[in-house]
Length: 213
Image (tube, rainbow, N blue to C red; front, side, top):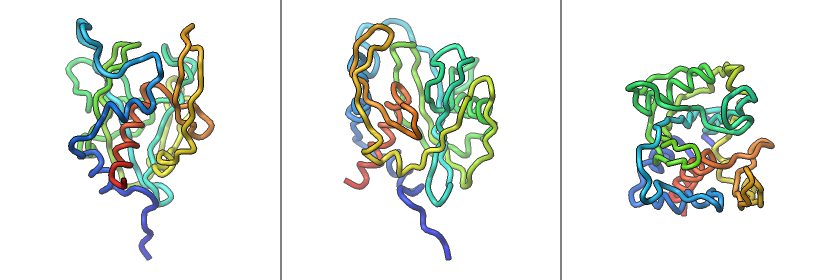
């Protein structure tokens, strides 16, 4: 007997990524801390540094699943935070190539561009002056993760149906770097997923929800 996938399927994801007229800013705002604005700021000079991250989908326990990483205390920035695999572009590489290279370096899951199935909207992170380009890839089975011990403290495997569960969302008032703010976040496997990673995931989640509204 062929098992049926639980939750959104790969065709659902492909349809969600290709939606026309999708309100990206409304999706971002669901996970936007109260002190920041999305997109490029008016009058800002120069070009933010480009970066690429990968949302890697794979089948596990009959569900589409994707990995998040908890950063170690050894990395230069965002110590201990939860992120998608990725980083800054190097040389003349594209953001697609960056996302794949960084995933290979961080998790030892090494893919080429034929596994990419789409992209999400580039997000300008004003606090670090990066333009993050999120890309989405798919492989049919769970990869053998080998986390880089310098960069990755833990791999969190997230079933896609969990991302659509409203019970994992929360809002708290924080003091962060001396600034008071209201912070929406996902609570995933006991970890707080907020900031740019949560904003990117919110676009992905909202695109999927739009299919079934």
